[in-house]
Length: 117
Picture 1 (cartoon, rainbow, N blue to C red):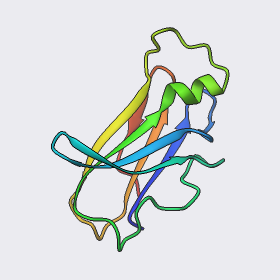
Picture 2 (cartoon, one colour; picture 1 turned 90 degrees about the vertical axis):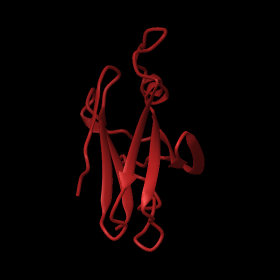
Picture 3 (cartoon, rainbow, N blue to C red; picture 1 turned 30 degrees about the horizontal axis):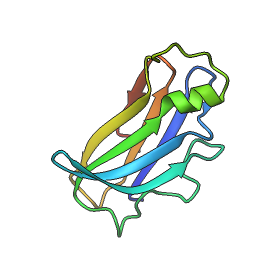
């Protein structure tokens, strides 16, 4: 299945539909944008995996989630400056033949991630 992500809004108990996400490949301090996407009603990429098995390569990647933009769009009153603006997850893919699922559970004040299945 390659690389996928899924975002759950833990403040409202629902998928983070409409959240903006950017995917990058990284090489040291340099990041190269691969794609930008808007999560669907299930909090996932509407086009399926970010990379399929044939396209995923061993290396380092970055996902950037627009947390403050999402919660503002939901009508949440955020302080200025807000506690979380964008959540950036840097991670590595060591075994390109395996599935790497990178979920994010997020509220305006906290987040959690893990390598899912």
